[in-house]
Length: 124
Image 1 (cartoon, helix red, strand yellow):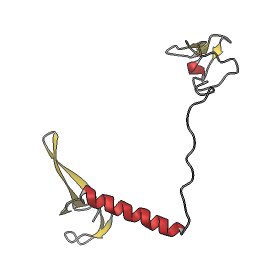
Image 2 (cartoon, rainbow, N blue to C red):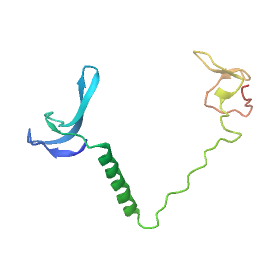
Image 3 (cartoon, rainbow, N blue to C red):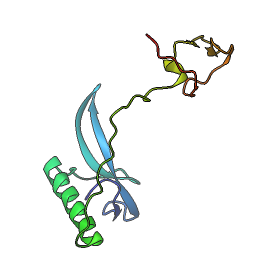
Image 4 (cartoon, helix red, strand yellow):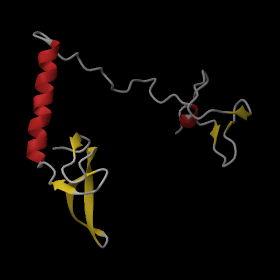
């Protein structure tokens, strides 16, 4: 039994869902248990982290089986910054920060911090 699973509750005899309840002792957590979402009756203890890891591995294997033989992960994108990285108005030396309005000091107009400008000059 896991959190969010649909069940037929043996206590209230209704169709319900399982919820994870945190038991508190003052301001500290004393434990956790699974309970019926309708009547709140205790249904058992949550699965251990090892069991959750095994279930996750089973789900990955099932997904791989669905894709079939020869399905491989795509190569990862290269996200290393280049010379154009961070050319936003907020990184420009002409960007003026004010609590009520951000301005471009070069063009004397409101500036979008995440905007781009062809006259970008990096802050020192």
